[in-house]
Length: 417
Ligand code: EPU
Image 1 (cartoon, rainbow, N blue to C red):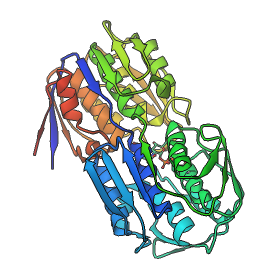
Image 2 (image 1 turned 120 degrees about the horizontal axis):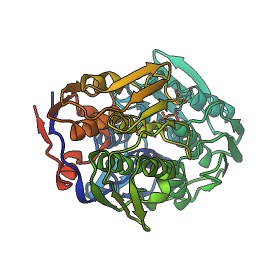
Image 3 (image 1 turned 180 degrees about the vertical axis):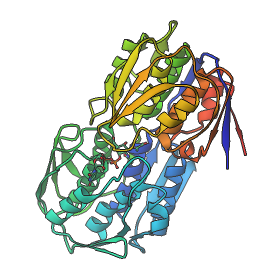
Image 4 (image 1 turned 90 degrees about the vertical axis):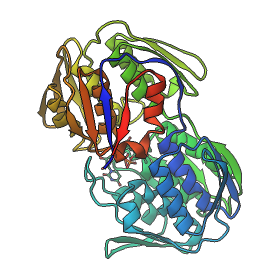
């Protein structure tokens, strides 16, 4: 199994470009199932989750071509297979995003139930409830969600809980439904706006994305389009935290500071100096960070996908921080690993109390999920001595070329088998 080896203690300096957003690209790829025509997607990051999604779409009959890895043309002229098998859904929960498009276009879908995952139970009851309200008949058989609907119809759906992929799934399904669908208590994440822009370019009538009420007027069919995926706000935030924690100075291109206000506020509170322009962010940090409290919540509040990275920053900050995770019930697994590096953290329920110490010690640690892996990389970069991170396949699911980007910024990092 591959591992990363990081001799710590080097401040990050330099300039890198940010990739397209994983969590925007995944639903946009699935939108290709909604039309017989070709969908050209630019700025698709080269990641394991994207490869998994492309092979799932291929199995369903989608042809995939591209001039280069980040520019892909998908054509689902005919859907030949309406099944998302367990082997794929278990490695990538976002496979559930094919449910809405398949049902809307082909009238049927058979998707393996995702089941639990490392960061929490993550049920899909809201996806199912919404599709049922739109007229789908859904049964769970042999671990699969079997959904059938001759023609979906518009409905008013109030989510019990704010769900990102739930909102995306129903938004896609509603584009081809008879009549108007209103999604209330919808997720407001920028990735939802990106998907709505893509769907509208395909001829859909989606209004209000980015607010908690989204209205979708169904149309008889969608057509081909070209879409450029938004920058990855979590990759952006991860590099900014790494630069802050190591006391460096970095310039990030091809990103958008407006996507991460809550994160930039916390970095400023920690002592970083941040400048930004239309598509760049510059961060300078020349002091020891101050501890920052944070509480994760749906957008525009502080993102759960940045919680672990800030935990590493707080480990070596001046003061004590309380980090509260409200989205997922088991997303503090990195605490145990950070403790192996001498961090002083106490967990109470869904909160971690992080007592800042002078430095972390390099150690052998294990990545448990994608963002936990990122937190361990940051911890490795600031630690005294060498850190070895096992199970880095998690990292490859969501960060494009992380080692080469960190190397450009001066980090000593290498991969070993
Ligand atoms: N939930 C339910 N029922 C549902 C759906 C969700 O109870 O039907 C619960 C979940 O268990 C969780 C909460 O609602 O406690 C929020 O989950 P959500 O559905 O919003 O998460 P998701 O759509 O499965 C996306 C991202 C995650 C990110 C979360 C929260 C994608 C592909 N994934 O997941 O990204 O953490 O939203 O912002 O967009 C990551 O990139 O590392 C990652 C995990």
